[in-house]
Length: 65
Image (cartoon, rainbow, N blue to C red; front, side, top):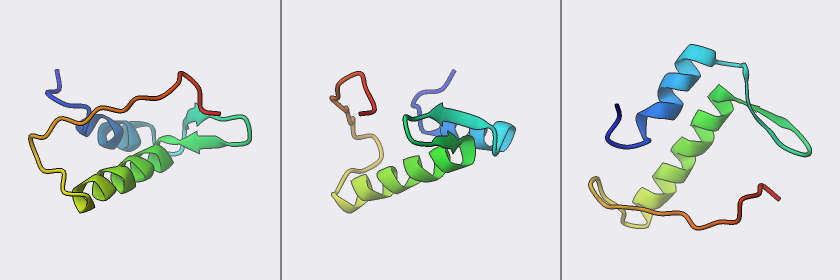
């Protein structure tokens, strides 16, 4: 069991690679692309001052649109 979700995209990208991870209305995203996107998001949080051990939540509607 993971203590955070951080390792999950990395492991999934290694295991499933170019397989489809997400289907959006206008495109599909592979596990590698999803991992890359989560890395960019994590780096943006670091740039905003978020540090290891900080808790971050995301509030959003249950939709990609």
